[in-house]
Amino acid sequence: MELFDYSFFASAIRMLSPILLAALGGALCSRVGIFNVGLEGLILAGAFSAIVGNYFSGSVLVAVLIGAAGSVLVSLLFGVVTIKFKANPIVAGIAINFLVLGLTTFGLRAVFDVKGAFYDKNMEGLPKLNLPVIEGIPIIGKLVSGHSPIVYIAFLAAILLYIFFYRTVIGFRVLAVGKNEAAAKSLGLKVTALQYGAIIGCGILCGLAGAQLSLGQVTMFSEGMTAGRGFIALVAMMLGQSHPFGIVGSSLLFGLMDALSIRLQGFSMPTQYTAMLPYVITIIAMFFLKNRGADSQTSGQQSSR
Image (cartoon, rainbow, N blue to C red; front, side, top):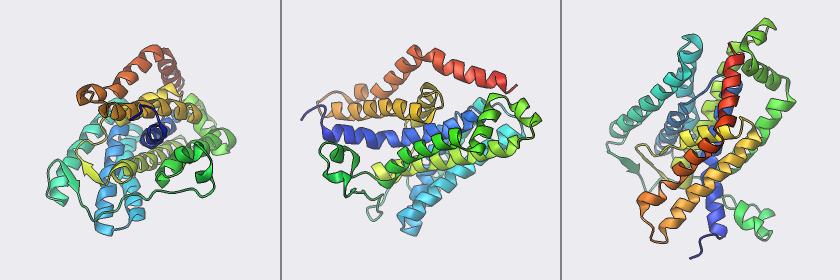
């Protein structure tokens, strides 16, 4: 078995999609001056809600919608706490992560009467889309075709978010709120509405990320199955400077490392070491590029005061 082949890069594309979607959601919050560290909990809420929706409805589409809705509800809770009650967003985000971890563990027992994980062989996961024209292109076809719809939605979301930020009036208003909230209010911008809108958008994107985890990569739910992807998405957002295309690049790096960690297990390397690879890369990336991420967040926080 080769270390790097078509299946390796195709796997990397598939694995980067939850990170990319969550990082884009984090960028939306960052652009309105809210540093959302609750991405982990939002993804987990989306993953659990999607499994529940799939189990009771039997429809993958309904499951994805319910997954997005579940994440939005948790996201709105975070929004109310941070916007209305002026709580520290970092503390609130950490609380959201623990809250959802506990709720999903309880939900497994209350809804499915199981502990640890839930799997039903009768449930269908997200379909794989074979793109007719692209599929026949050498090299590119094997990499691009055959993924779930959410994988393509992730890249489309990055393009649409770029257009939204830099080509629309509302997008410029969002950027203005993040640059200087006080100045935005003085200009008559509806800052609170824009912040809630960004938080809802973040919830939708994280819900899709969760649905990809529980219905796209596998068709099951296990306790804490996000395994730190929300925090990796947070790092990807910071390294990408909250720019959609920068986030795509940083998410690709972590997707490659995630795929590499799984591939190395096939070469008889201990699982304990291979599982650490994405997180080691995260720490290294934060160390070498800490000034970029820290400066962007610090400037945003200072300007919003």
